[in-house]
Length: 113
Image (cartoon, rainbow, N blue to C red):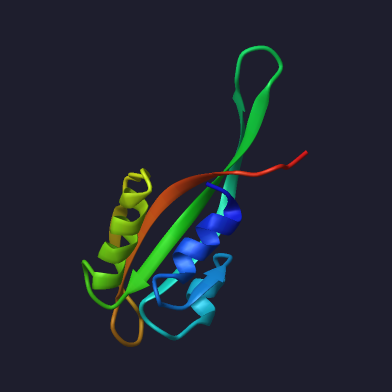
């Protein structure tokens, strides 16, 4: 999967999507998705050949657990052979209702160098 394909898949869910962790705080709509890179690695093949992988965190935030749009995201990833572990947490808010935060790692191929 490329970054462009990841972006297209996320935007196809039909909720606000932003690149960068700050989007989680700046968007007041729910549910919402943010994604950002956090790890670069080289996937070595035989000889000197390799491809560069970038791990993205994909965060899904909603006001309820097991949001139907999260299930839709999981289904779309599974349909293309991607089966990430999805972590869940409830984040209490100081003022107002809390949020359900689900997050996963998606590896994409990018040309970094």
